[in-house]
Image (cartoon, rainbow, N blue to C red; front, side):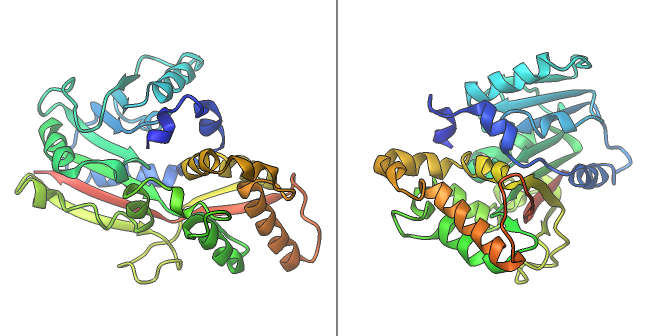
Length: 304
């Protein structure tokens, strides 16, 4: 997470090329929230909001607050809001840590979400703080996505695993992820403790949902993958360049950029592209499109 705070990190590029969350995911969360007849829709909070990608999807709520510790992320989120003509003051962004929500009153929030950030939380602080700010029957939905998959090319998954998780210090970024956050994410948030184990009796429901398809059959009751994106191969390379582990790799291996085949991200991208060419039996150009999907895990809870 510290990578996002560095001066060399480009928040605008990050916002442009990261995958977006499907409307079906938000609809699923809203249906969970409205299961209780007394559910309210006044205030929602997005923890670790980044550039506000998920924040602005919380449209049913009268007031929505995005929270992030990075001033660069908040700056991009606020800038996007200012450039939105239809902005009505429904949204606001506050620089703060997720574990310290002192700007929120007790029992003042109806929904708390976190998208691709909760693997960094200190759960002994987060669950008590969320329990404090949530109203009775308020909801929690924290989610994260793990490694990308090329929908039409499952045979290329070993190449993805070797690059993302491998230990080769010169051809893999596996050793450069910040831990334990990345491991928690790749393990589908299983390490996130049950809210009632941290704050006994504070929550009337706690559940885990896995939109992971056939990729991880050992997970309980996996549902179909819902997070997908069609992008060009060139855009895929731009997305790969937003990965925090790659930024760290480059700092430790400045000579890698001199590789005649390209730096480590370009070499990985070329390996994928060449694999697709073998399967398709034709050349793949940068402007050609490729289907990407991401397994998603969701942790949900209801305030007692």
